[in-house]
Length: 355
Image (cartoon, one colour):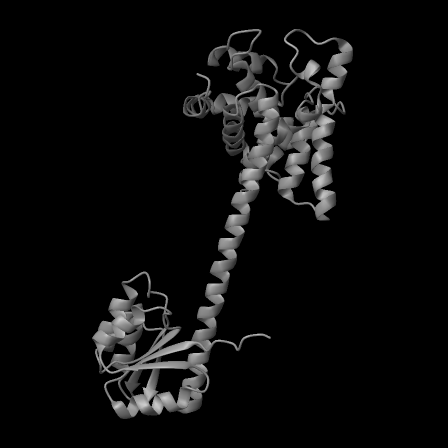
């Protein structure tokens, strides 16, 4: 059995006992009504839980002082306030709105107008509260999704015996490159402002397909044989397939999932068409993958490996510059060169946890 719907709570502030009785009689069928006769009691009552959904206040009874006190308190600032003012006092009406009242009703009150105004403001307050709750739920869901993405990406990175701080650096380098390229017509359609945070979130997923690569190949310290390299190359397809599986399960896709799918599948493509898995060339390679390709290689070059020491920033930049037009999109390389200071700051801020 469903419980009866709870009535919205009204607080009425008026120094006249007759006014309070009249207003209670008019409103108590639709609302839970509390009545008080002075400012101090009104402020104390408004602080109590549950707080009023609306306050109806007579300006003669220190109504402006009540309004100022309630508006200055974060706990009560959003409660709608309706001022009751004797008809024919336009200066008081103007002051009421200037002081922060939500509405003004002229006395003598018209019952139908009184009920309609109160109902409108109560409904608006309830709608705002619902929107805030939904935003909070969406924010929480977003945080949970971000945590899940990071956990998946970190798992792949740790299995490859990489430092997860590598993922953080790639995220921020991708954003630095994207910002530099936003004014370039070749990238205008993809690097719109709402896409930047989605690229940031998708970039760490570039190597998730490595979780399906056998340890004997993934962790082999020496050079891979041609056969082993063919197996290693499959991590791009495995990653793409994982994202496609998510899209299929959800029954839809979105920009984030598209970026994740493009990055996992195409970050090993080369601008001259000699990469894998599809041998795409030039603008046929998704923008998201072209950004990650440069960010990933730069960070790999400046990071220590079991088979070599870390290159200096200057050497890494020069090696990438030499790959412009062959391995990398020239415009993305130019963006890296323009963002050198940002990239060095990112490297310093997100240092390896093994350092």
